[in-house]
Image 1 (cartoon, rainbow, N blue to C red):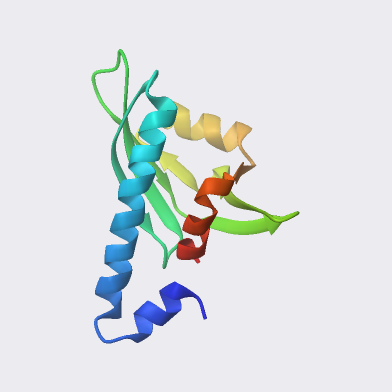
Image 2 (cartoon, rainbow, N blue to C red):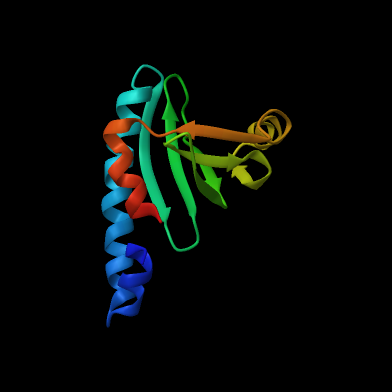
Length: 126
């Protein structure tokens, strides 16, 4: 049984699910801030493992206003023993119309391979 399904079945399970999402989001924010530090900062990261959605807010260097990005649905897959997060560009909205259109035009499906040291996190996303 998946952890999320187990947590939702417990009394107060939605609160446990929410706490798990907040913990994972905090870790994701820290991880992404390390990755994009040269370009800007992730100000906020929200994750909903039940709906399989996420959103984050970036403040890019040289910009005055943050950019909000909403991924309405993600999927998880395993290929050749490697886990991947798959994002469909058609299910992404941003606070910048031009960026939303660019993502929809150029990112049909983006497969992000999960590094081995973060494989345990994937188990929590199910």
